[in-house]
Image 1 (tube, rainbow, N blue to C red):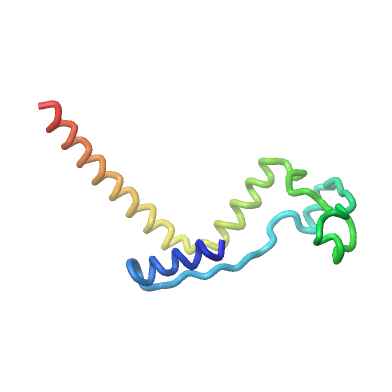
Image 2 (spheres, rainbow, N blue to C red):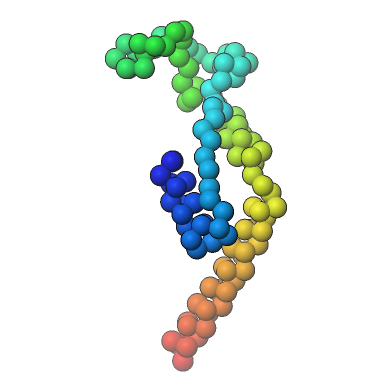
Length: 114
């Protein structure tokens, strides 16, 4: 993810709006509260996992969260951090570009069939 953000920041700085990107990793699932609220099954940490040496307590698998619930958790986490004005401007720009491409494709298709 870090490499992706760096690459996108470089593109923005040199070819776009001049604003670099940043990344913040946050835990959105499975939190202790979610595990408790959803009564998710727990298991001891695998002793073969190098992280288990420092880990105290039980583990919970993200897959234990029902898919529709996990989907909503991820969607809420993303949308709560989006600048909706920028997002909507990007959607509008994408639509304009899509319409322009469709016009070119139709013009080419018309020309080829003549």
